[in-house]
Amino acid sequence: MNSTLKKIHKESVRTVFKDLFGHPLYLLSHPIKGFDQFKRENTGKSYVAWFYFGMMILVNIIAFNGNGFLVNKNNPKDFNIFLIIGLVVFPVAIATVANWASTALMDGKGTMTEIFRVIGYSFFPYVWLSLFATIISNFITYEEIIFFHFFNSLGVVLLAYMMFFGLMGIHEFGLMKTIMMFVFTIIAIAAVLFVILLFLSLIQYTYSFIDSVIDEFIWRFW
Image 1 (cartoon, rainbow, N blue to C red):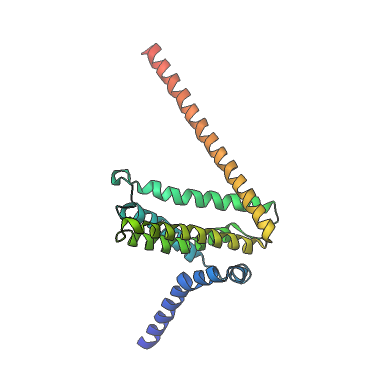
Image 2 (cartoon, rainbow, N blue to C red):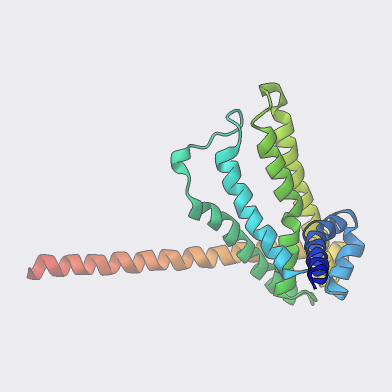
């Protein structure tokens, strides 16, 4: 009985390790074939996407406080965990909705869940390279700062690389249509941001109007 439980536990650990590291690494090195399987064979796991979504928030928190003094220009007094969380959650939410809305007009095959999974998996290279950059930033000299920027920049490039091929794969687009998709997605993001800003501006105007009416009422009748 104990040996059976140990075997099951060992297999579970191996599966989780493969899902969290092996599969994202395979997608990074074989993006076309990997994301085709991601779509057709449903090899993407939601919990992996959520894991790297959470890790993206965590590495940004670590970077804010843990980057070495040579590269860290942040004031510890300005640390706001809700702002850092918002700077990850908000862009991911907007990008997911905007990509889904724009590709719906282009006969894209990807669902909103698949789009989120691709974005989550795309965080894989950035998360580990950014974490590595934060670690080495505490040991490098001024002349070696270039290595810190190199690993962070490489993480951003590989993130964009995985996202490009990932969205191409789940929507089953060709190269030119994928480029058009990104253009339309950026336009959709701009439109969503415009509507949000317009809504916030309307709320602020309404609040100011009600506040002025209350002040006038108090001034006249109190």
